Length: 280
Image (tube, rainbow, N blue to C red; front, side, top):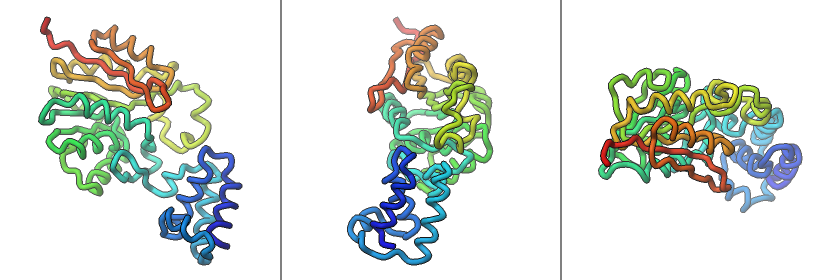
């Protein structure tokens, strides 16, 4: 079987996924050890028996719904290559908006940043990589996920992140930060999408948060003032249809300069607010 024949057959088998061609190419790259540019340059090349067998195994698992990131064991995020496992959420491109917004609000010369519910470490490590003078703290309640985040820090050579085990603000007693960031669980617990697509293979505790999906966001909004410096920022990722509700929660809690930022599709994806600094 040639590369082209293998890809045509794979795309047909994966037509029920969102990105069948990309999925097929990434899995074939893993099976052959070659790059995507190689696949485009040499479509007539014959696959070895070993590569063909490995590709079939990966393809069958993808047909059953396993995420490509889990099959490859990694996912690109920002400028980093991150290890991912079933213990963590798979980093998604829309979360890069949270990183951009945070970098734009960092104090000159760095500052202290905490990422709550760090998972694979994607947000904390991206901030730390872009701002080596920053002191970044990554908090995670899952020991298994925190181990993945620590390993990602080592693999990417990032040393300015402290990893702490605990639930939200629990391990941060007496600590204050310039920025608090989080991509918390925000899906309603009864949402049928939790039983569809790639999220079926991700930890439910990192996805669902109460009847309206906002339980953890409320906890973070209420707890953040004790851990922000005056004038510090809280930035939260949430669902595309939750922006109005999250901004209202921020205003009710006394945050100022509340703003909703859109993602590349124009959906409100990140809400943020600043703790008043006490000046008129």
